Length: 77
Image (tube, rainbow, N blue to C red):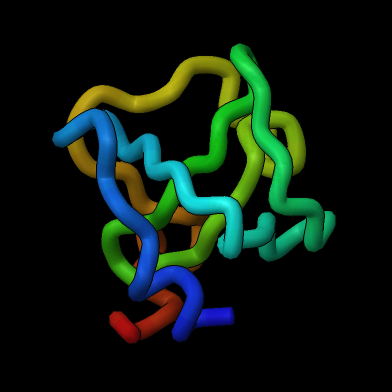
């Protein structure tokens, strides 16, 4: 999964939104995203999640960290 994330192409720089049909959500394992339920990547470990799967109400501007990275529990990948 992390190999697929490395291939992801950023289309909106600095918004934490990335699109690549080969990347899947690390929670639900579904690759599809739609407006209002975008894929968001952690800048610390490259975790990839849908907004709805991780409880993200608004796509963050700039960098975003998952809960373990924000708490310093997980090291960077």
